[in-house]
Length: 260
Image 1 (cartoon, rainbow, N blue to C red):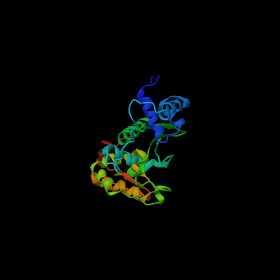
Image 2: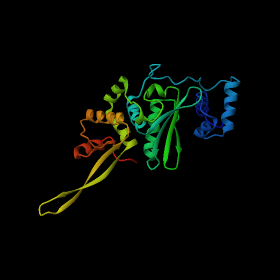
Image 3: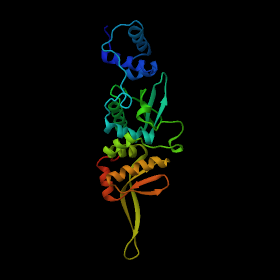
Image 4: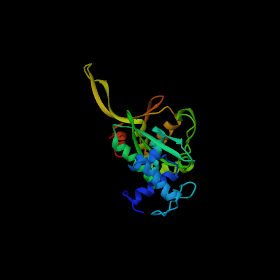
């Protein structure tokens, strides 16, 4: 059946409809009118007309043994632990949502790319807000990949990595650290003073990484990964981890760097 839109767009919209995505959201993602989504669904699903390719649910790495892009997953895990959550939608589908400051569009695109690698058939949606961009993608199996999902705020409940997650982090600790620092951390120039000969006080500046989170468990996940990488850290206050030594900052700069 001919369409003004590509068959790939039609198939993608129908997959999302099958997964319970609302028509309005589906239309926004694919750049079509709501009535177009409804017409496609009526023509293909209700009338039983053939599609370009048959719909198959995206297999789950945990339930179905599908391949998992572990590097992308480690990065997404860091973002999820810092500024992400999972919400239940309709028909047993869940929405993974990551929040990122709207000042850093490249990082938002990086999160969307990681989502597509973890769920190859996914179509992440970037939603603008007053101060933050929300990157969302739906799937029935997000709780399988993020067993930390649960009711309530993360710092008010136990957050512990499963054994298979620890194995992924052991292989890609730098990806987890990047996700954590870019979600709930920052890189900035700090300053301090030091007395010198003659009673004078000299001010000096240095680059510092800081990660802040109210969850003791998430702080521990970060420090464990830093230990794996041999990067020294310290705890300047109850809810923060700092990396300040010159060689340690240089190490983080190789795979974290400033936000953009």
